[in-house]
Length: 125
Image (cartoon, rainbow, N blue to C red; front, top):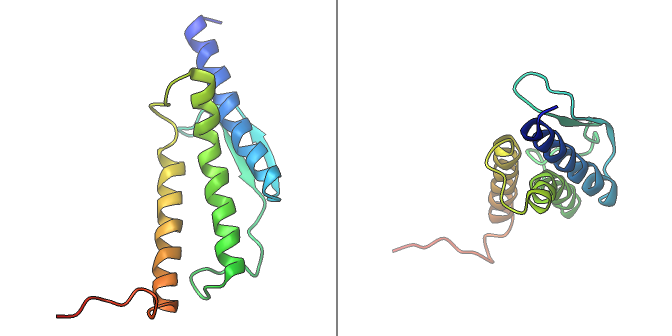
């Protein structure tokens, strides 16, 4: 195996291990982690199904928010672990993680705003 391929394989292993360790640390379960390339991905972690009660689009509770935050942390942990291994920020492979984090964070911020309009009143002129 060439050194560049080995570096990419090791970086992928660190990336996926970062997801797995963060999931474990945040009490999230998953089915498996792999560094076997498939369908445009060098590796991935397959979460178990989301809990039936996790419906952030229907209700906005502290329980929903906490679970969402745990998922976001787990997604970011992959690129953080990879960056520590590479000693620089990853350039590829994390865009899907980032987009799902942004979507979830935006959703929770919007839900919080709907729930707490007395805290953040809308500007009116």
